[in-house]
Image 1 (cartoon, rainbow, N blue to C red):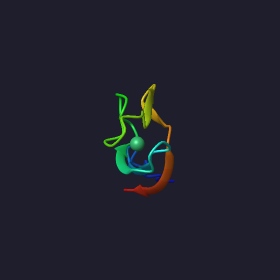
Image 2: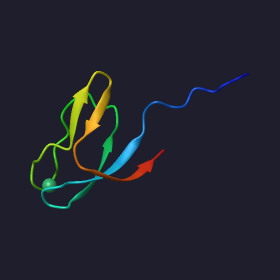
Image 3: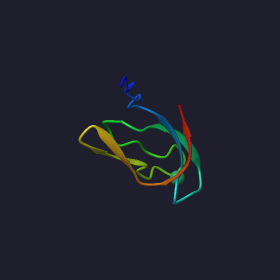
Image 4: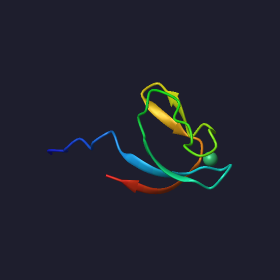
Length: 61
Ligand SMILES: [Zn+2]
């Protein structure tokens, strides 16, 4: 009966599709997170949750 709410925020390791840079991003980022190497957008804010534009390699809790 007692469902513990899952933490809604996670860190994701995302691979940039443009330059293959691997970068850790916050999955509820409210801003566009850009790749540190080439400046491509890695996340797009979507009402609370970020849409991940690159490839998610790993979920870090
Ligand atoms: Zn990049």
